[in-house]
Image (cartoon, rainbow, N blue to C red):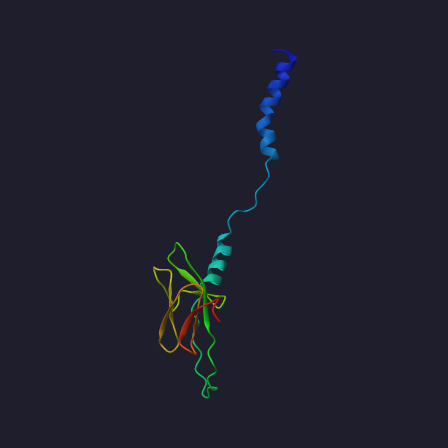
Length: 132
């Protein structure tokens, strides 16, 4: 083998080492088990005990309208509904198969909303969000 053959052989033999050394190191792709557990607790907090009712209740104020911003159903079967821009995880509200939400009101009444609809408890009416 001539001089150029040896040089070429040496270069080709060292190529995998050079390529491997030059590869960028990726950071951790997934979270550690402790970080995943903390995220799960934030997403699904443990149930809180209800406080005892106050003896002298203030006069009832007008109830705020409820806007259904969106719905998400995860592959685990759990669902999240965004009501007034706040996430609500599986509670008294039921996500239906036709992408509607059955909203359980404090007075026991049930209202069915689609994303983008607003319920006004003072008038008992459902309207689209873009309507006045």
